Length: 400
Image (cartoon, rainbow, N blue to C red; front, side, top):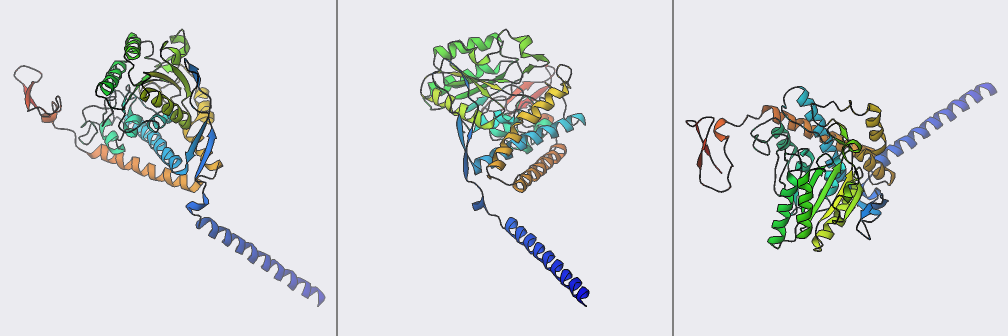
């Protein structure tokens, strides 16, 4: 009898323990599922890398304040650029996108950091690796993907393609190496001439940094104290040539000589944002141009015709991904300070993927622009004019 009572007592204790564990588990699930925004840290301050300075006594701050809303916004935008470029890679390999195509994955912190450091009324011009900037300047994924496939709903009506996208206060997307730099100085001259408290961000890559027209532009911009932020996106390779093999001096932030310069960690969105704010204040104070070098890295090759592994190793690319990826860096910061949850960021990832897939579907089904629209928009706000076609007897009409 005593043995039987012992067995029954043990069974009851085990059942109670199991029920208690289940109750704790249920309670935990309730707490997790009922987690509200009040549970998250609303803002946090992060240490950022010190910038190297040229002809400046003080530089950008070494700490950056990030709010939860800003962090989620930056994360979503960078993920959108990343996924958009990966989808463009896929469509190119399927021969749905044709021609030149230069992808921006790896450099997302540059585009997002710059945009958050200036005003929407400011101006920006860049080279042909322009998809990310088209998005941050106000373009939609749908418009960008449709432009890549040459469709009517593209941001340039399907006539610009990868290298020639435009939106308000964004002047492209320029295919000639370095040629956008004097154009950017011209936009800055217009800002000053018209008395507007605006500036122009003028971007180029390390491959274009040795162009003579860039140094000519530096000179004019300094003489006229133009509100221009010159930015060299140094992604380590000009096409397939490393910067060490192409330039006697790789201190691109010092190339302006008489123009102040700063070298920035271009893989950290907060570092880029604070440096851009600093540069913008410099320009708006009437001090003239300033030069920024963003040290960044592209994961893809120079263009889709470049596999990107003949002049660098796969191990080098993987090391940058594992140690310096801009999206992972922001994600880690937000999670470590309780500014977001893993599930919340995963939900953003799902939403971004759906947006990209929907845009790709539109980009492959939207009609191509008709031939009669080929010459439209040559001039702004002019009456229709005739344009010669492929021979003197072939006439097309241009409508503004």
